[in-house]
Length: 445
Image 1 (tube, helix red, strand yellow):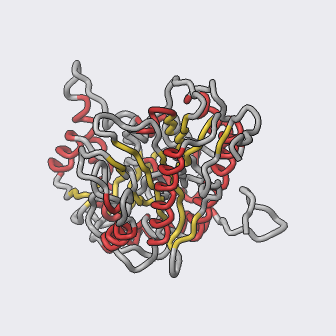
Image 2 (tube, rainbow, N blue to C red):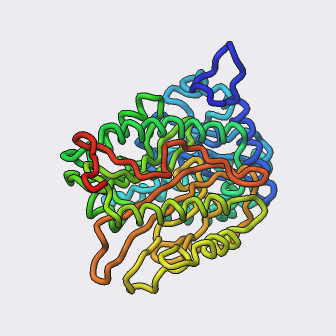
């Protein structure tokens, strides 16, 4: 059953943000204990939100410096104090009562260099370390390893100088986030519902004479109208005509769409409650498809279906890759990709990647064909309630250049007891033709 975006009084709806906050912190705390960490210091904004902290100053996402400190066994993390002490933000973030005390987090501080004052950054790093070490001592964790997700050279040196044992905190956070709670799965579904509508608006508007940037603008307008919080990047993937035949993904440009062009668009990174999409479709604009376009679209679609059918709990990502490639063991299939640079079909960008806080989340990935951009990560067991994006691209190398027309199709979903539930509903089985100046009738029939 599909629910609306909001909590209401007249029916039960599955999304409970308080429950989601508490369950995520509990998972992170359990992971800290399992990995033997006394605490985690996290600069990544998505991990901060996972632990209940959300800054409305999203420009800081690319101005790293503000951090949270999660101490093992102590519930929610310590976070930065408000502009006027802890009363500033406690009203909207009451679960941080008594924890909104950090004074040293500052935007930019991990990325700044001040050549005219060479001692400034080391002194700032010393202040961060002193504050963190003091809290670790207060909780009896000073002699335990401190995990950290992102750092810089001066901060590492400052921790070493202070005698704090630091280590990589990413394995603990990745373990915490990779199996999703029911509320997280609901948020991923809702992000897909919003983006379903955006694909509809794009398909309805597509016509010759548009630019790729205009197409991206239509998609962005559609998702914001339906309640998306933000987009992960400055724009979506939009590749048309010759640009669809190579190099996908690529950002949109001022290229003008012409009749007979493929339009590859990924409406990615659309956020609902912090959970995001990765959502490729390929459309044809302004003319009937050629035989080549039909064939390349079918090749990508069949590869996507085979990849979707392969997903299930209990197998490893290595098993998945081998099984999927075996299903494509036929001429022109993904299991018989030529040896580069021989002419033929290449399925680069055909991958399975984790989805959640990002359009490419921490967690298991499947390398697809394993060449020309395959992820090549070690095998990991696939578990129920892991969420994945499944995407297949098909591009044709002619020996000296890429063919004009390439296709990429994708959807996201959750691993169930015995398979994989797809979240997205935008049609993909048949090639959709948009922007025809009337209907075509064959004169040969």
